[in-house]
Image (cartoon, rainbow, N blue to C red; front, side):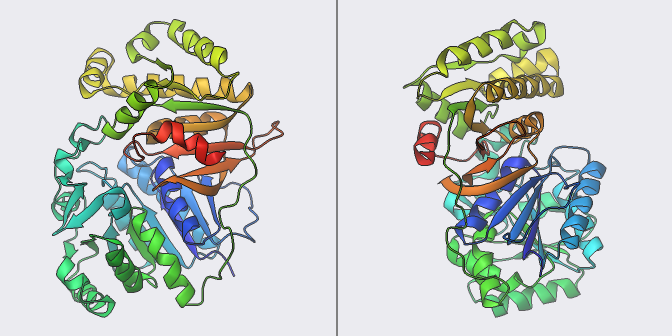
Length: 426
């Protein structure tokens, strides 16, 4: 019969964000890292999320990788494709959201798709096409300081119009509240005008349910993970999905607890501050990392001295915008980020081999580097820590017990996330 939903996610934390909502809505979900090269047993799987590292890479690379994922998912019988990007619409004026969406539409032979970045449970809403983070417009939320994709325009119709040669439309809230039939009629009117990508206003869970009812049978949907929590109910209504118990059950966790953070978001900085009020942490500096291996050796020694007790250990390169700018001025933006990612990935590989069994990683780029270094190819999705962030598990070669992994988008999680995450797992 094949899987019901096949998702193409543009980074690793975004993939687990979507997978988390699918599991919570009753879909047995597997996350794979990159396009699988071997056959997978998907007998007890309703959804597969292919995690790519395509958010910030060159446009043509993002398009090529996304099409490869689409083709693989089509081969698994996926009834619907979901292109997952960040709820803060992270991109540049060249892409990659617009070009990838256009390429997926062309490959599927589809005429239109919706763009639903909103995730109300995490404070991401869209009104009159403008994206809000909490009560702030996107460009005044801290995202304007993002080191890779600074977001300085909250008008998503305008932002997306700079990424595609096709007209971009809006499904406004007034139309959405009239119900799925009215929303569908509006989309049909827009497609007759050549509008392929439609930004959708979304203020709450009720709006997500209307959108899901509107687009559940469309070949392609796109957005943040909010839409993912509403679609499974529609799949059941259509007879595509059966009820299952405990869709997110994992094996018991074991081993010591490690946090690696490369995110520089406001949320993560607050989480680090809260954690350091209770426990110790080790701060990495990209300039020192570039100078020698001494700081990396000190970080390893710090972790090894503390990983023999029950408390989680934190090593972080998260920094304020001024600190990030200083490092980028000294090393170059790309080189500074690469130094941090390489160091955190090296730490993960060494410490997991020495007994870390519960690993929390903060930041999309950092998560990608760590997952790649560990050679993780699959993640079974488990219970939620905070909206958008679940625990997952994988089995590494040569390890008797599974590794429990949480990949956190920088902007997600409450202020006590780093300490509470391990209480949830226990």
